[in-house]
Length: 117
Picture (cartoon, rainbow, N blue to C red):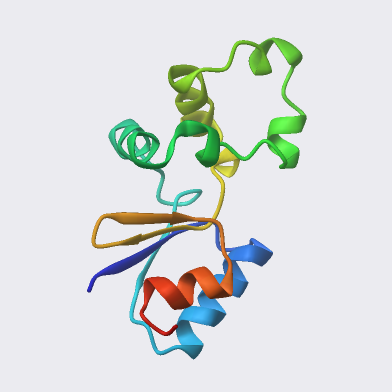
């Protein structure tokens, strides 16, 4: 099983996810998309799997500070462009386990993903 945790290092939710994975003894790679970036193909693949609506973090400060014109008429293409420009608009964490995605962090969900329930 190959696990990659995608997100931003300084995020509180990311810290909870990393702490859970470490505590459960799960080996994983960490990809900080604010530092290392993210490409359009990856975001398009993710959007195809889970939907762009789930990936776009509308609750975050970065999204809320956008001009209304940037928020209007959102569709997948526009949302992906926003996330490419401002990676902090990607909801986090995104956990990729052998190609299956889990967006956000909930301990019970992670326990199910890793067969601990």
